[in-house]
Length: 234
Image 1 (tube, rainbow, N blue to C red):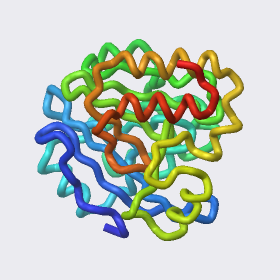
Image 2 (cartoon, rainbow, N blue to C red; image 1 turned 45 degrees about the horizontal axis):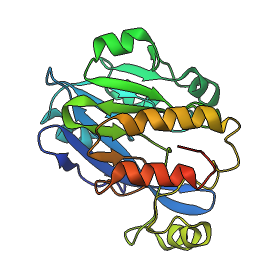
Image 3 (tube, one colour; image 1 turned 90 degrees about the vertical axis):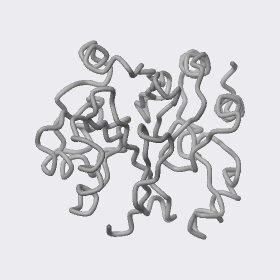
């Protein structure tokens, strides 16, 4: 699947992830997409991956793809191709992503009341105070999962040597941190604190983000500490 991993179950029957390599700022990261089976049996793809016949076959075994979710203004690159591959799916995302990708069409804003009405098992938690990302983290109530993209990251032994090296330099190796390119782009730390606090209030058992292993042990403590290191008082 062009470097993509096969789907790996995180919560049996409910959540799966797959990773693929991407180059960003001179390092090779693992970029994660997440598949959530909804209560009606359909699927939501968070950060849609490049569509392939092999992936589509895996997904068909799980359910029908009804939602393609763009979580911030960066994780949109493969969404137009995924939307063409799954024409019945609704694309949800922030308006800011449209400015970065002329091929992208969004059916519903991620903060719209209609999104919450149609997918009540999710709670949308915007990361305010960080317009550079314009990210919205989802809380999936049935599995008590926080689902984000770039709210934090962490490199590990499974990563490419370029990212392991850069992560050691920037303090992200085997340590959950705010991304180095975000650290100086938090103009409103008070608003960011309110947003992170709202995430911490949810009884999450795991945190899934775009560039880290699934964070399960003390995930809320790890999220809080990462933002405290950037001067966000919680």
